[in-house]
Each structure stands twice: as structure tokens, then as C-alpha cells.
Amino acid sequence: MKKYKYPSQQMGIIVINIYVDSMMEYLNQFGELEQSKIHILDSENKEFHNVSDGQTPVSSFQTKSDYTGWAYSVESVNAASFSAISQLSNIWFILVLVIIVLALIWFTIITHIHYKPIHNLVEKINSSIGIKKGAGNGMKRRSNEFNIIESAFENLLQKSMDYNSLQQAEAIHRKRIFIQELIAGQRVISASEWDNEAPVLGLPIDYDRVCALSIEIDRYHLFSENYKPSDQHLLKYILESALKESASERNIMLHFAWTDQHQAAVVLFLKECDLPYEDKIYEICNVYKNWIQDNLEFTISVGIGACVENVTQVATSYRIAVSHVCLKAVFGTNSVIDRLMAQQKSDMDTYVVMGMMPEMIHLLRKGDDGWRDKFEQMVGDLRGKRLGRSELVAFITSLMLHLDKEISFMPPDIVNVWESNYRNRFEKLANLAETLSDFCQGAEDVLGELAVQLKQQRESNSNKSIAMRMKAYIDHHFADSDLSLVAVSDTFDLPSTNASILFKKETGEKFIDYVLKVRLEHARKLLVDSDDAIQIIAERVGYAHVLSFHRAFKKIFGFPPGEYRAIYRTQRKG
Image (cartoon, rainbow, N blue to C red; front, side, top):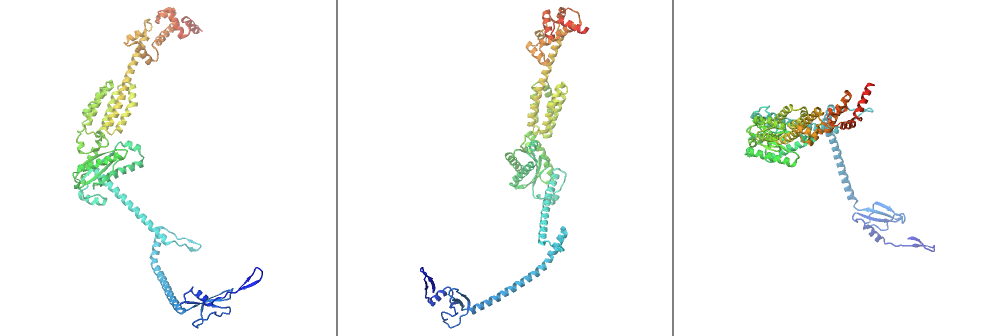
């Protein structure tokens, strides 16, 4: 029951009747009836409903309501079976616990057994790397042994890698030195020695022919000016890699080594499948040269040596390759030069060519344009010769010395012009010209400018000579009243207009002004130093009319002739 208060302040009671069986049935549906059963006890701890089997309920769990005073209890029907299972679980738990304890003991024993060598290893590492165990506050500081071991192994691995790198670098260096000594002829090796040395250096012993190449970067002075040193190294690496890739595609082994800043040596190892050898080598070099031209901003020239049977003859092959690449002086840059191309040129014979130099320079000095024909004839003869870079330099130097000697006999002003403007240009040509075409273009420009300069100098000297002669003529014939520009022009066989212009250009004075200056200067001296009449003085200096003399003298000196004489003599007496 439950009390209930009405709005009228009266108290009422609400009574609810419950069927205990229904409530028990409701409660028991929440549990499994085979394993447990719920009981309800009243406030006196008596059960509302009797147990059907007559057994006293054993409560394993009980709770009491504060409102009704009833108690609810749960009776475990299969408590015995649960107890047996619980005991069995306890036995397994104890057994597992014993196994774990034994395992820990065994692990501890094994760890101590195996820790001793680790401890010894750590001690050795400490002693080798100088680790000092310090003490603080009377307690020894412990190091992390595994960190020490890890650090030691890392150091050992790094040293091993460094050692391997050094070994590889040393092997590459030994290989490069070995090949360079062979191609330079500084080392003689037999076939058996090669078979022993080659595998160690990574060189093949199974080959049929050997061929050396000489590769040059064309116009290296421009290459070094246009690229920084780091970029130059990268581009040279590209040159090396491109040739190796081209040869690798044809299953040909090679060794590539830079012998100079602008030149590299290559040794190709050919097999019987590469027949015909010369065609195969030319194909590789031509493809390589074209790839460089298409993909880089500079070109190369390649000289192909002879195919020899044994590596002991590689020095001979390389000398031929170097001589071939030097022939780019006549074949031009960006060329692949082999034996067949070299045979197109005859051996160098410079006596005939050198014999034409004095005649060409003599024509140049005289201003005869025939020097150009002689120059082209010399260059044409050189094109048919087996002309190398050294021969080209010798030819340019010889031409410069011939010019130097010829011009040394000319007037000093011409010698100065040659020394200051042209000689150094020939020296630059000798240093930078790589091909005959380079020399031809540069030398023809320099010689052409020199010819114009010599011609202007000759004309200037000639004009100056005529002007000086006209001036001397005036100084000598100033008293002649018939002295005039026309008379002087006729004397020197020149038109009067040309004579006037030439005189003004070379002396800086007009013809009539210079005649007037000479006459009046002589008249002034006569006025001061003599007592001659003014009319006589006027006639002696070339004036037919005294009045003209008066006007001219006053215009120049500011006073008439008589007054000028009086003033000057008065000053001298005072």
C-alpha cells in the first residue's frame, strides 16, 4: 500500500494486491532457472512462497528494499559443479604461475651465462675507444652497454664502407695510371702479364683487337670561358658516359681517361663479332660525335688509331690517333678522322709555301692587291697538306716574323702602328686558331686592315712631303711678286684646288695666309734693321704696290710700316 494525499488535505491509502507467483515468474525469467532461483523474503526474513523442493534456500546474493522491507535473494542451484570447476581453474592457475616462475629463473640463468661475453666485449670496446666510467656521489655511473655495442658496430660499418670506397677509388686510379702508361709507351707489358693484371683492374682479357681513340674538345678556350669549373667536370662526365653508352649498346668494352684538360684517351676492346673493325669503330665515333653536337653547346673531334692485335701495341695505335685528331686543322672541327681520311692529304712540305711569303709581303707593302692572290694560293696549298696544329702555329709564327722583318725597314710611324695594333693580333691567332679556316679568316682580316693602314700612311707621308716642299718653295720665292697659288700648283703639277686643300691639311694654314705671314715677317725685320725706304722694302718682300703693303702690314701688326719703325726705334733708344 501507499499513502496518498488528496487536494482537500485528506489522507488516503492506495492498496495494490500482487500475486506472488506471478511476480516470481516475472523475476525468474531474467535468469537461467537451471542454475539459479530468486526468493522474496518479508520484513521478518520469511519467504512469501514456500520452496517447492522443501530444501532450505542457500543465498549466494541478497539485497533488501528500504521502502517495503522485503529482501531478494538468489539461490545457486548448481553450486557444487561450479565449485569443482573453480577448484580446477585454481589448479591450472597455480600450474601456469609455477611455469612462469621457472621460465623467469631459467631466463635469468641463461642471461647471466650469455652476458659474460657481452660484458667482456663492452669492456674491450670501452678500452679501445677510451670510454671512462666516471663516479658521482660515491656511486659508479653505468653506461648503456647495448648503446655502446650499437655505436661500435655503426663505427665499424662506416669504416668498412669508407675502406671499400677507398679501395674502389684506388682501383680506378691504378687502372687509369696503368692505361695511361701503356698508351704513352712508358710501360711495356707482355701478354701473360696482361692476363694477370687485367682481371684485377677490371679490364678484359678476352678480345681480338685493340684500338685507341683521341678525343678533343673543340675551341677549348671558349669552353673554359663559358662554363664554371664545376660545370666543366659535369660536362666531361657526360662526354665519358655518352661514349660508354654508345659502346655498351654494341657490346664493346672500353676504358676512358682524360690525359689533358681538353683531350681524352679511349681504348676499345673489340671481338671477332665486331668485324669489320674500322667500320664499327667509325660508326661508334660518328654517332657519338653527332650526339654531342645535337645535345651540347660545343663540339668534339675524334682521331681513330690503328686496330692492333695485342694491347702491348696500344701505344702505337694511340700515337696514330693523336696525329689524326691534329688533322682537324685542315678537316675542320667536329670531325671524325680515321686512316682513310688522313690518306687524302699529302705529307707536309712547307718549303714551297714559305717561299711565297716574302713576295706576298712585298706586294702588301707596295699596296699591290696582288698580295691577296698570293695569300689564297698559300692557303690553298696548305689545305692539301697533312697539316697539324703544330704546323699551323709554325706557319702563323713564320708569317708574323716575315712581316716583322719587312716592316722594320719602313718609317718609324709605320713600325709603331705594326707593333701596337697588328703584331699582337698575329700572336693571338697563333694561340687560338685551331683550324686553317680559323687562321685564313683571321689573318686575311688583319692583313687587309694592315694594307689599308700602310696605304694611308704612304699617302699621308707623300702629301706631307709635297706640302713641306710647297712651304719651302714659298720661303725661298716670297719676294717674287708673281708668287701665287696657281704658280705654285703648276710648279708641283697639282690642281690649284687640290694644292690649297693639301697645304691646309698638312700645315694647318691657308696658302695665302702663309705667304702673307712670310712676307710681312721679312718686312718687319727690314723696317727695324735697315734704313731702306718703305717702298723699297715693299718691293723686296714681293709687293708691287706700296699701298697694298701698307694695308697688309697695318692689318697684321696694328700700325702702318713707318709708324711701326718709329715706335720700335724709340723704345730701343730709351
